[in-house]
Image (cartoon, rainbow, N blue to C red; front, top):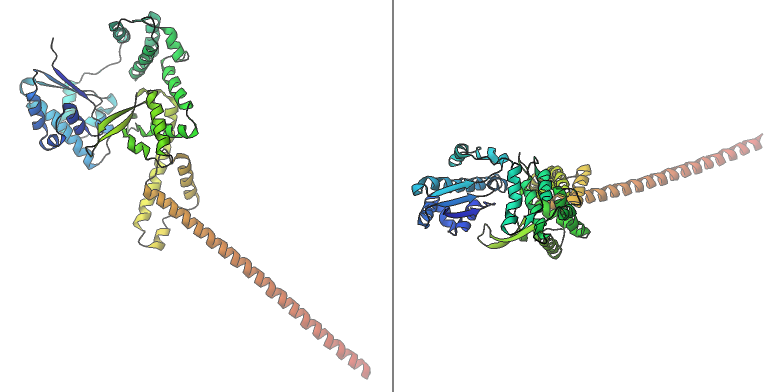
Amino acid sequence: MKIGKIYIFQPGKNPLQSLAENLDIKVAELRSKGSQYLKKFIDQIDSSRVILVVDQLEEVFSLSKENEESHQEREQFFECLLGALGKVNNNKLCLVLGIRADFFGKCAEQEYHGLARKIQQHLIAVTPMNKDELKQAIEKPAKQLGYTVEPRLVEKLIEDVENEPGSLPLLQYALQELWKQRNDKYLTVNAYNKLGDSKGIKGILEKHANQVYDSLDKDGKEIAQFIFIRLTRPGDGTGETRSKVSKEKLLKAKSYSQHQINQVIETLAINNLITISEEILDNNQKAEVVNLSHEALIRHWSKLRGWLYINRNNTKLKEDIEEAAKRWKSRRTDIEDAKDYLHRGEELKEAETFIDKFGYILPLTNEALQFIEESQKYREEQKCEEEKIQIREQENQKLRRIILLTVIVGLTFILSLLGCVLFLEVQKKCRFW
């Protein structure tokens, strides 16, 4: 049975560009002509059926900023897809959207050319696999290549993932690692136990990620922490998701040299914790893009979960510092007035602690760094001024003591002189008697 022509892509940060790249069509034409251009392209494909699969549709929402430009990009993207769906002749186009359940609400926040209604009308919920489905997912791919999965291993894998939310990516990772340990046409439960230190399916990922992380030196560990956090996008009422970042941006981190960062990137990539691929960016230039190898890392690696927790708690402080910097910048025309907007005291100490401990993970804007620098300069100026005042006060106290001593000595001299005069007067009177 002939299925037809199939295209599968992930929308990423720039969905229109990703669509054009996957179909090998011009993105400029797609932007200007929209669904009409996509319809024309599909009509020309020599196949009775064209299946367009948008995998991880949630990236349209999770990887873009909430601004007018991103909203317009989403509007154009959905106009292309849903508009073409209605225009293509003879139901030639089949559109398949794969999206996480926790992002359904995002689809209904705007009209998006009837997206929410289409989903509601044609929704197929992918429910958790039952035991038989899990068994087939574990056994069949190996069987196709002439390998056997030990029955005990099948039972163990099902036991570890059944009724565990979000466990399929973890199962995928475990099977990939077991495939590397295959021998004599078998995937064994002994290999499974060794991979995870007998801690089950979560132990495999945890152990591998920890081993790679622990192999790095102190700077390498800090760089790795920075990379993993940059590759994870916090959810806005949803769970965290993977976030692609250009390698060039990662290399521009201020705290470490490009050579150091590149070494860590290569180590993580060699050990399959991150992937490096070549993609076309906003400026239509090809560039290397870094991504997490598995979303399971976000959910099941405890170290990364801890970093993300710390990151969430410090993001608010970062935003506060940057907001204070903007207020200060708006007053910079009046030098004296601007000084009132600088950080000082505990606020400045808190900002300095943030930069020292988390600056490499949550880098501040150049404006915010300048703001802190000016705050530090002002603190030093105030300190110098206080020292000068203190010195002047000490000198004044010394002068006052000298004056007081001089007065006391003078009074003592005068009193002594008066005493002598009185004494002489008394003696003089005594002679007359």
